[in-house]
Amino acid sequence: MNILLVSMHVKADRVDDFREITLENAQNSLKEPGVRRFDFVQQVDDRTRFLLIEVYGSAEAVAAHKQTPHYNRWREAVEPLLAEPRTRVSYENVFPDESGWG
Image 1 (spheres, one colour):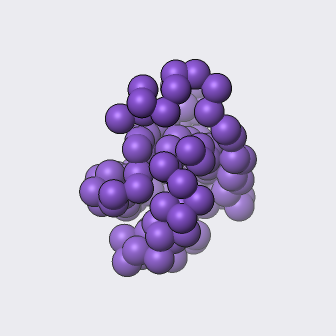
Image 2 (tube, helix red, strand yellow):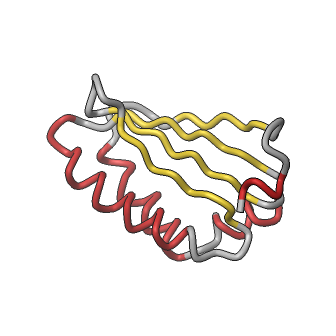
């Protein structure tokens, strides 16, 4: 199980564009066989900040995700929309056990 939290700070005038592009990526990511969850959330008190919560069944599933056309379209499209570089932190699962992730 591989869990990634990707934080992004978007330029204020590009939030709508970012939401549209990232929603498309999230929807397509959920169709990948190794993706257990792909949540896309927006911060309540700062609408320019977003978080992706990505849960993969294996390291191979993470690598496969990065090869998909939808991920590569997203990566290229969002780069100019960001106010600063995105950050990514990896986590390992504690609870629930892997069966609780779908």
